[in-house]
Length: 118
Image (cartoon, rainbow, N blue to C red; front, side):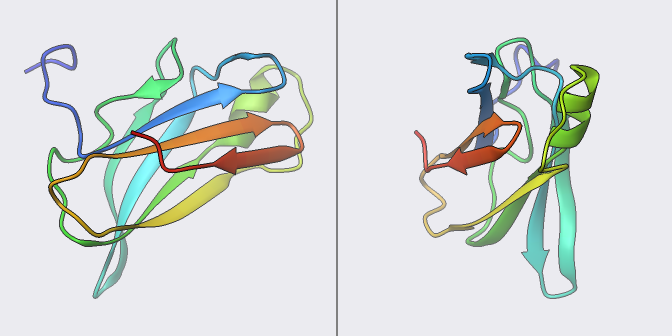
């Protein structure tokens, strides 16, 4: 099954560069689960031309804590732009396995924000 026909991940993300007003393409994002043995990577992808990752990890995850780490420094470095944040990590809790979890990230060279999307 290729990425075009694969079922969407239980957890997805979307990155917008608020400094340029455009999607942030080419940003590596890594999804981790907090297990009894510590943080374990369960998925990793690069944002597409629209700044999205629809297939970041498994199609189903368990209740628990998760973290997405974004390589924002590499993204800004490729643009020749200085940034204060070389990486952004967002921890969140999955409390209902029947729901989809979308974690958008808004970035600029010296600020970022996030929210629970749909």
